[in-house]
Length: 245
Ligand code: 16C
Image 1 (cartoon, protein in one colour):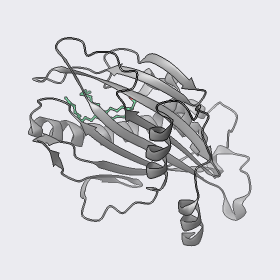
Image 2: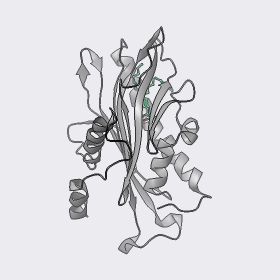
Image 3: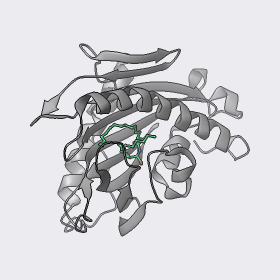
Image 4: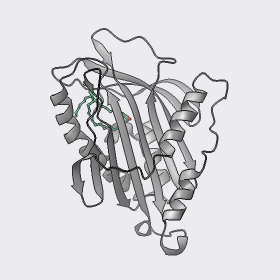
């Protein structure tokens, strides 16, 4: 398993569907490659926020110009879903409001950059006592071999001006999923033979004043909650759907 893992880690991502002349093309390629290569990243020295069976959520404390941007790394393994299915439910807006509880309203599609890449704006619930936040980010999904990845990363390209009273959060998030096939690599015929390993990583800059203690407390509660809620949702949602490996 170790050698196949390093083989995959060394592999280059297939090129994506975006016009190479597009102003975001290079940025998307670079950021995605970094996330792709982070599969299996070490959590040494990170604080374990939550550990519950296969679910592990880690954080490292990091401050930038007085703001907490604590990187989060979480891992989980769930039975009954494939990597493609989980990643699709994270990326496709059709499912977003079913599992995402931080939003104040439905995501806004600012632009469709390619069939696998959207430019989105999201407006979040207000976290007292701070100003309401929004974010503008490209969202890209990519599949190679047994692995599917989604990257959500803030950008200024094509971003609308900030509404008054609001602040803009900067995020750099990925969800990488890998399908674990039954012994011998056979294609599964039943969902019980299928497992999905997930690695979620997030770096969120609050983009304006916010008390660090409040952020850290909310993060500690919300990331594990998200991992449970989202993965549980995926397992449930696909139960009566045909397998997509
Ligand atoms: O990755 C996730 N969701 C994706 C699709 O929406 C996308 C979004 C990432 C944004 C994550 C930060 C959300 C902060 C919301 C502001 C506070 C609302 C609190 C409401 C509580 C019910 O990639 C899944 C995201 C899981 C989010 C966990 C929440 C972490 C809070 C950390 C604090 C950040 C700074 C907020 C500044 C006020």
